[in-house]
Length: 202
Image (tube, rainbow, N blue to C red; front, top):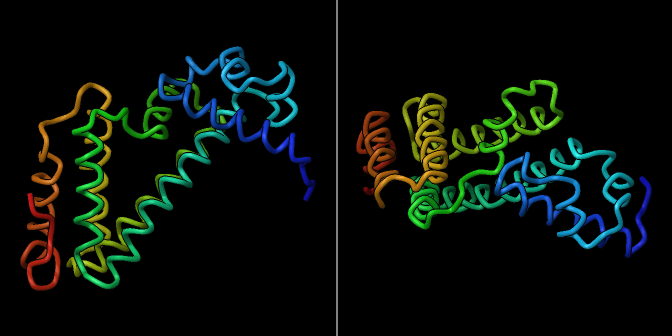
């Protein structure tokens, strides 16, 4: 594996960080010119590190998704000690993000924007991220004692993706995500999908 000099690594990281910030406004808004200006690098530097804009967007989405999965994985660890806690904290996290008016998921936003460009390399990153999040949801559902962990994971994915999508346009009322998730959990198992009635309180 080729090692980068310290200066090269710093430039690489600045380019990724700048791209991630600009992706909040969309893939089209993250032009090479704006990335260069935001990162404070020479014009050819992004091409030397990433090859082109499509590859740079893919790398930024992959890095953002990895951080997101790491955050969600921490909920799985806590759920092993207290069944149901992981799911409750996950739903509370999404509910708070929506209530705060955050712009939702970069991966979800990119998936919508790139639907008309099926050959974009970011689609592989988007699919891998979705599989990782679905696996985490299923793990949390198993820890919570759901009768059908895969089914619960699929239903919660719809709830959470819908919440993140609506965050872009203002989001639902505070607590709406928890209320919908609680209804889904109640239908999945005795006492709200978890041992002893553990579930997500609205």
